[in-house]
Amino acid sequence: MITSTNNGRIKYVITLLEKSKFRKKEGKFVAEGLKMFEEAPLPLIDEVFISAGAIGNLDKELRKKLERTSYEIVSDAAFRQLSDTVTPQGILMVLKRINTDVKDILEGENSCVVFLENIQDPGNLGTIIRTAEGAGASGVIMSADCVDIYNPKVIRSTMGSVFRVKFVSTDNTDETISALKEKGIKTYACALSKEAREYDKYDYTSSCAFFIGNEGNGLKKETVEKCDDVCFIPMCGKVESLNASVAASLVMYEAYRQRRK
Image (cartoon, rainbow, N blue to C red; front, top):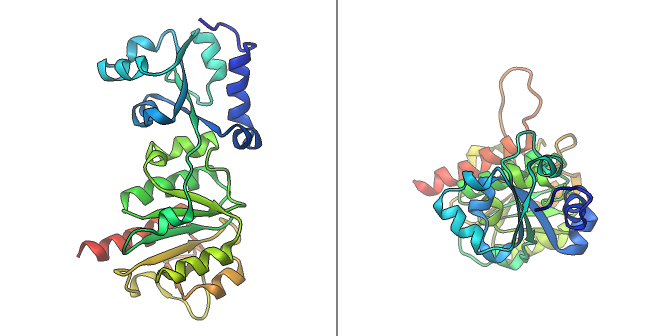
């Protein structure tokens, strides 16, 4: 049993939790909690750390899954220092990063893609990934300046959807827009402009991609200009804008609503 956070393996996990560059260098990330352990595909799990007090909380199926992994028991006190959450559930995993290409997201028919530009809030990104699964989106493409999707807060916010939704980061927005258009995917900038129409006035039953911008500044002007159309979400009162994850949810579910009919 590991009883000290000075243990080399524990220090390794803490560095993964805290440093994006280290996660990228190692090709690993950390996910915590019973739900995440239940959802995580076995091939992605590199190692599991479980507190002594949590083993008895695992049901039969989760105990079977634990036995199929490489796991280490950690004292309850040490685990509390290791945990990134306020109320730790006593189980934490080191996982291999998920490798996806833009082509993987665009390969299907009648795609519904979400492109995120410079999203900075971990909760927003995690919620968008989770909503993308619920709305049946084909995948999420992120600009390179978005918050790291392997940030522990992002991973936690996805509630397991990170293991099922295709996602990729790109450092060239122009190339991505060109790739979308080559596939016959119509691009919609979610922004305010003279050309913008209400988001529910467009037909999303064919392949489409929604562009969502930074929480404070929205989409870059040049990004808006390169998209085929511009849509906005009408609002009452004095509200100037909606949370990025709320806006993304509305347009994704409008596409889902139209396709269900």
